[in-house]
Structure formats: structure tokens, C-alpha cells
Length: 322
Image (tube, rainbow, N blue to C red; front, side):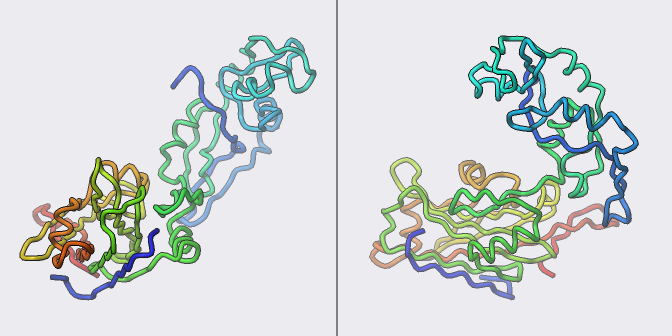
């Protein structure tokens, strides 16, 4: 982040692969039942005395993750997953014999008979799946954790929304504001110098939800461009319930963008590279800045609203703030 002057002010008023499946950690066999939507009641696998031993058979001795086809074995019957086979240089990690290309078809068949809970059961997912279908569900599970939406680093933190809000505030020192309107100023002393990207992130809390406002400068072709866009801290379906507008201008001209915020399920770079937001070309940004066009001075204003359904005629009525 360059040491340019950046201010953000909240305003209370409206502003002017099926053959080979990668291995994964295996969850213990259990069933989850909703208890008033708040806690989980778990049926222990003690009712299935063979479950633990089957799980142990399906555990790779090298990485300790669950094994999926192709499951390999040595001449002495020791098994390991396909990923670890290359790591051990085709030598059995148990008896040190050469592995060859023997598949343990019997163990692959046993796995077909298993049904397992989603690994995100503790986060609220009640689903149970056949062994070979579990990974595909988990990749798209609505209860899976969200990745940290901070754009300034490759942050590996994930979690639910309350955890990520606290993480952004405490660890990334992101500005937090309450309200559905905003007034955002970006000042850059040398607008022609953009090293990869400069960015800023502000979190807004309104309608009981959290939104991430991104403002960035990055190189597009030979010239820098500036972009502002909003992401919703929740899933894609919820995001469609909201709309937002962004406006930037100066010298009697202005640009206006209206759209639906993208979910933070979509990575920051994916949203940016799709140009799904307010894009300000370098020449236009300098025109808006006025003066001698040697310093960038942009003010981006905007608002967030919720589209509410009219029960009488089915029309959408914008709820501007709460």
C-alpha cells in the first residue's frame, strides 16, 4: 500500500474430474439433526462397531487423509493414496518394497458402501453423502467457511462472517463504518506510478449485514485504471437481495455505476478482473481531479439498498436504509 492520503467517511444522509478424486480429510460417521436451529444432536458411530476400523483402512499412512481412487497397494497389501505414491518414490512406506501399479480394488469397493456426514457438520450442514460424493458437495457446501476478503495480502484465514469481521478489524486494521451511504476520497500524488496494485478496503454494516467496499488502482495495458466495487459478506443468493450505486465526478461531469454486490465467495481478483464495478480510466480520473492534472483527487460516493418484495403485486421496492 502506498503512503498516499486516503480518507473514508460514513454519512448518515443520502449523498450528493471423475476418474481420480483428490484425497481429503475424512469426517467420523455421524448424523446431525437440527435442534431449534442452534445446536447439533450427534448420533455416535458407536452404533456401528466396524466404522472405526473401516476408517482406519481408508486412511493413507503417509498423509493421514482419506484415500480415493485410485488407491494403490504394494505386493504385501499395504495401501496409500495416489498423491503420496509419487512422494515416496514408488516405495512402500511400511515395508519399503516397490509399489508398482497395483490398485486395491477391494478397498475401493468397500468405500462405495459408506455414507458420511459433510465435514462442515459442526457449522450447521445436516447432509450425509456416499463416500465418493462427499467431496463434490463439500466444495460447494453453503456452510463452508468464507475466505478472508482482504485484498492487500494472500491471507489464508477463513471462518464465519462474525469471525472474519473481527479479523479484518483487529488484524488488518480495516476501517469499520455503520450506515448505507458512503463518501470515499482517494488522493494520489503521482497517478502514473502504479506498482501492480494499490488498494484500500472499508467495511460497512447496514441491514444487519456486512459489505466490503474496495477501491483500487492497477495497471490495465499501458495505463493505470481505478476501480471501486462492493462485495457482500455472505453467500451468492443473499447478495442478490441488495443493490448499490457508486458515483464519481468533477468539472461538471460524472460517472454512475449501479449493480448487485458480489459475494465474497468470489475472490477479490476474480471480481476485479471481470471489471464488475465502477471503472475510471486514467485520463478521466485526472479530468475529474481538476487542477494541473498532476495529482489524483477522486471522491467516490454511493449507497446500498435492499430490494424488498411487495406482497400485493410482487414488485420490488427499494429499502434505502435501516
